[in-house]
Image 1 (cartoon, one colour):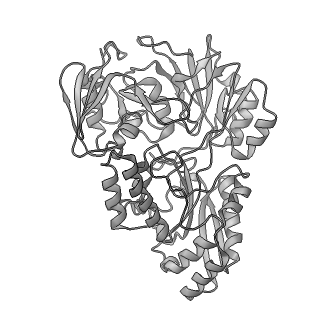
Image 2 (cartoon, one colour):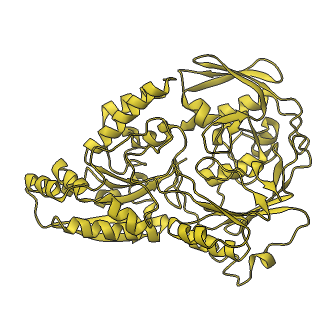
Image 3 (spheres, helix red, strand yellow):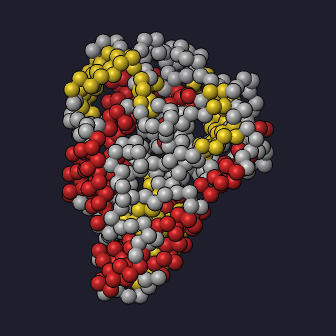
Length: 522
């Protein structure tokens, strides 16, 4: 699911409160006093927002998945390290029999808590089919049970993202059919009340917007996890997280790019700083249906007037590279360069504006009240003024911003003009392109970009196994987006992290997202 910086998930915007609002810090006490001390080894980590839903059929984004990874089992999971890949987890074997049939054999002895017995193929079938409506499953048809521990995942059509998205991420988590049916009666959403656990940890406590506590699962028979407890503290603001780390209240956190140099030059004691690329993508979008932006020449004038390196220097302290599209380096379909060079060209911008016959143009740009984005908006305002376009900046909190382009939330989308947006992504290019399909106009596609060709390419690309052939289609899709004039790609940013070497050896995905089960204590 796709988070907008902070951020709302791809398929359901979040309206979570600000971290620590009325919580731990507001109570005026240090974390060490407000969260009880525990004997044994404890890992304290920052979460980018509060946890919203721990049901694999209804989760709301990456932070939820980070916790689900600890309390449930999956057939496969992402490997830690610098390269994207997956490895077996609950599965003893997974093999692609043909383009639409994937056979699996489960490891024996994985137990559900609460007396719900062993994890079997029946639970796999129940779990996958109850979440089949989620787009991450693509063309999942059903799961055939062959035996207690064996089965076949049956697809309607070939689906390459099964290996890079569905199985190792959110919808791949397996829940107990008996436990879920008893808890919900209809197999529906159990939210923040998991009825049974099958991973190394179990949910011990959760205080909204304060903390989430994981403790060892006594029924777990696999390799013993490194920590007795994992405490995840929701801290949306990275500067706040940095202060919490420096105060000793966190052992692991992401840090802001503009703090990277400080942490590298004068790190706190026993601290390792790691730089990781990000899969996120930030861009300036334009509502193609707004009367002021219907003319493609106006949109192209804006594209060419925006100087991306200037933005990155001011807003990202020069630590981020210019994006060439929505697909990050290291992922199939990443373009070597954009059609519009990062520096733009003011002369070309003025020519496009003259071709449109427009003068004295006044526009608005909507963005979140995050310091990085506010800075970007100010720079864009100054750059567009150089071609005679006046821009009013409309800074909004996350809750307000999350509805501005969504038709189901009212009429505000009709007034939307320029948008500074930022989405999360995953290591399959379809995760990024799916937000810009025609079906997503007024949902995630706030530019209201419509292209039959784009939709056709997206549908074809997910069926291809050859990465080179897939890449060609994603190159063209990003070309189509840029040629519409509705997109000015900015950056993928970065995700530097710090951790306390006296407490842990951290383990992350290539993009710096923590894989808590692979953390080891010191």
